[in-house]
Image (tube, rainbow, N blue to C red; front, side, top):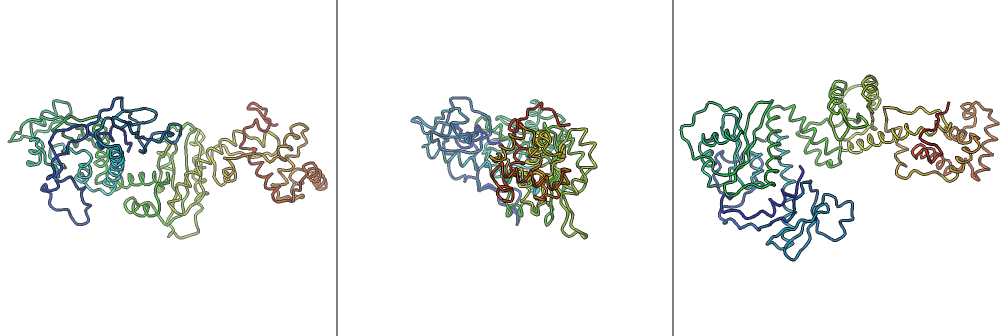
Length: 551
C-alpha cells in the first residue's frame, strides 16, 4: 500500500466535522456473536462519548501525492541526506506545524501541540500499515467481505456498504450509529432502497438494473458518497459505497476508497477459488521473501495459508530482457516449460522457484543442472527474444530466497559486464569462452566478492604496462601458470612450450617483479587482479571500446 500525505492528514489531522455518525461499541450485532476462532473486530470508539471537535488544519500549499515511507522530526540536516527521500518531516513553527516532504514545505495550521501532532501522524501511519496487512490476511484466509468492512471501519469513520447485483446488502458497518435514513433503512431491510438505486443509476454507477420491486420506498439519498462497481469476468457483481452524512469527502478519503475498492475486487475475484487464493498468497509471500522482509517465524505462520513447498532443496532462475519488457509473455512460456514449479514476476524479471520434495526417492537432484537443462531446451526461444537467464546456487530454506535473488541479479550484472569487456581475450591472455545468455552465479561468485572494490595489484599493473609495450606475453604465461596450480609441466603443455623454457621465463618474471610466485599472498593477489581486470573498464587495460578483436 502506498501511503500518501493526503491520507495521513485526513486520518490524523482531519478538518472540522459535524456532530453526526459516531462509532458505537454497544451497537447490536445483527449477525450474532463472534464465532470461536474468528478474529475480534477492531474496537470502535464508544458511543457514550460525545463527538470531539477535530483540530482544524488547512494546508497552504498543494499536497504532494508521492508515497511516504516514514515520519521524522526535522533536525535541519535531512535535506542533504539522500536517505531522506520520501520521508515526511515535521518542523515546529510558531503558528503550528510545518510539513517538509521531498523539499516541499507545507504549512499546516493545527490547534494541537507539536508533540501531539507528530504522534498522531505517526500513529496514523502505523494504522494504515496495519490495515493493509489485515486486508491481505482477509484475502488469503478467505475471511469474508464483512471482515474486510469490519477492519476498515476505524479507517473511514463513515458508514460502509457492499451490495450485490440484486442490491442485497452483503456487508456493512455494524458498529456505526448514523442518522442517515438510507443507511439505516438498508440495514433494517437488508437491501438498498429503490430511491437510492435510482440515484446511483442516474449518476451512471449502475449499468444493468435488475427487475426488482421494492414495496416500501425510503427517502432518497441526501448525502455525498463515494461508490464503485466490482466486476468479475466483466460481469457486474457488487457495489461498494462510503456515505458521508455530515460532510463532504476529501482527496484523502478518495484515495483510501480507491485502495479498498481494489482489495475488495481482489477478494471477490479469488473468493471460493482455492487455487487463485493460494496463488495470491504465494505472490504476496514470495515478494516479501525476495525483498528480505520475512523471517523464519513469520514464514512459518504465513506459509500455513499459502502452501509453498518446504523441506526441500531450492534453486532460483531469473529470466529477463535487458530492458525489462515482455514479462507476462515470458511468464507464460516458463509456466509451460517448468510445470509443477512456481513461476512469478518480481521487478523486471520473471523467476522460477525450483523445488522438489525431500521425501522423493532416488538420488538427490542437482537443481542447478536441472534448471540449466530445462533452459537449454528453450534455447531458440531465449535467443529469438534476446533473453538472459541467471541461475542461483542451491539453498535449503525459503528464507534464503532473498540471498538467491541477489545472486541472480549479481550474475546478470557481472555476466553482461565481463562478456561485454572480453578483456582477457582482447589482450591475448586467454581464449576464454564467455557466457552470452546464461549466467550461473557459481561462475561469478569470485567476481562478486571483489566487484565493489576491484583494483589491480601494483606488480600486476607493472606487468600489464610492459606487456602492452613489448608484447612479451608474460601475462598470458602468468595466467596459465596460476590456472594450472603453478604446474610447469601442465603450463608448458597448454602453451605448447618446452618445460625448461617455462622454468626460465618464470624465474626471469620473478626477478623482474621482485617477488616469488611460490608465495601464497602473491599468487592470491595476481589471481584477484586477473578477476579485477575483467571487471574494470577496458580503458584501464589500455583498450578502447572499438579495439580490434584478436585474430
